[in-house]
Length: 151
Image (tube, rainbow, N blue to C red; front, side, top):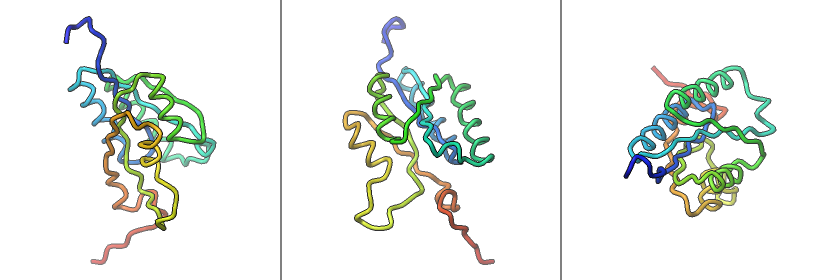
């Protein structure tokens, strides 16, 4: 690739307050560097975002700073349908690859609706989507349950 050629890959990291989101930012930054592409980090602000606790707000800001330091362009968009917002942003921004975390919220029944990642793959079928496991799901983050370990 010639230095004057436009980048062929545009990597999008989806930002959140999840403790594992730092891994998503690092993975997207590494991919952008490896592919010689550009890197954007996106936060979808929903009506529920105002309910976020202080610790989650602090973590989200930390992830935004981390993405900036890794060379990402930071974007925030507003909407209540996160997968649709991500897909539309990707379409108009020329995104070629999306990196996001696997939600720690699991379906309770087989008839439950699709997860965020399933909706996104249906909404944006032509994009490469990389799903990074959420290690925090193992320690109870986001599950509303506490894990007790017996001595």
